[in-house]
Image (cartoon, rainbow, N blue to C red; front, side, top):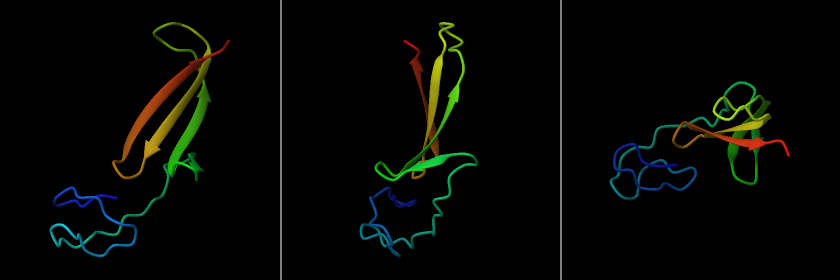
Length: 80
């Protein structure tokens, strides 16, 4: 988790940023609908089977959700 004011890293459960003193907003770590939680990495993911539109190869897409930045990343693995 990061401070929304200065970007400093925050400890879990912090109420104030130790760098700038900004009050920490409560952030819920709810996954997007249908996503599973990976306790080892703390990230959320969903898998789907679909062809890669660039190569036409069949395979599996894994979409990762990063709760701290609220960003998604997709990774494609082709069938062997």
